[in-house]
Length: 128
Image (tube, rainbow, N blue to C red; front, side):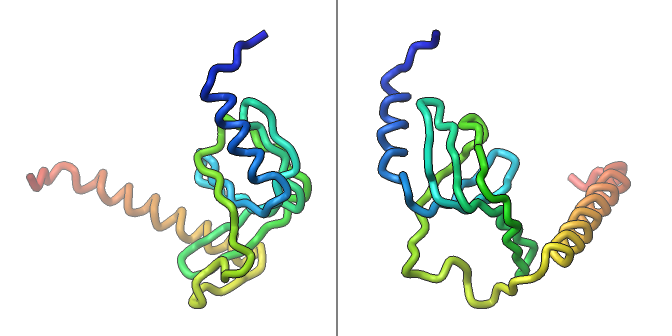
């Protein structure tokens, strides 16, 4: 049996104000989830209903449907309520299919890996 400290009680009461509201949840691995908070516990484990993962690459985005989704509290970095009256994304963003966003992610990942490889190759120059 674990002891709940004052910070755990504060966290669970603050999450209570988000029940049945549409949230954006940022996870430790960088993923962004959107959904309606239906339940949570003292460890900030949470259940999102109608959840989707928002993937953004440059000016492209895609919402990948996940359905009912359980999030482990230790993976949560940030939780914020979405204002349903306002646009969620800037107007220059373009919604694309899941296949297109996965291709864009692959291109972005390959470019990042190439950049890292180039930095390693240039290390011998020691430009400092």
